Length: 91
Image (cartoon, rainbow, N blue to C red; front, top):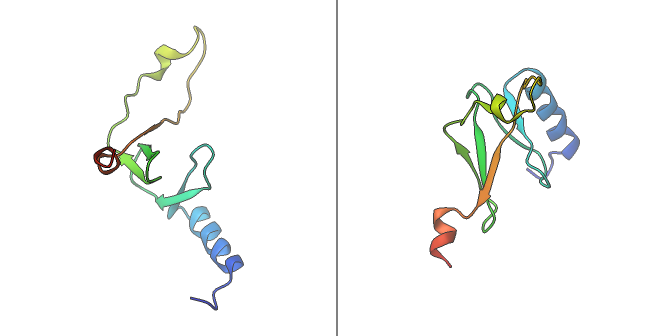
């Protein structure tokens, strides 16, 4: 939509985030991405070949065992990097 200004897009994104309809997905070195909220806790895989991001269905959990003794883990973020099935086939 050529008449749609970028400020309008960001204003609506901010409203959807504030209203809980969207959730920000922040991957290191990447611009923010957004996904629908309410999917529950999950992580992501980023393909180094095509830059696609895929949702991972499970969380390995139990990160408390990795923290130093006496530390409390309150939350975590995990993302995997590598090659998706399609990009592996192109090697």
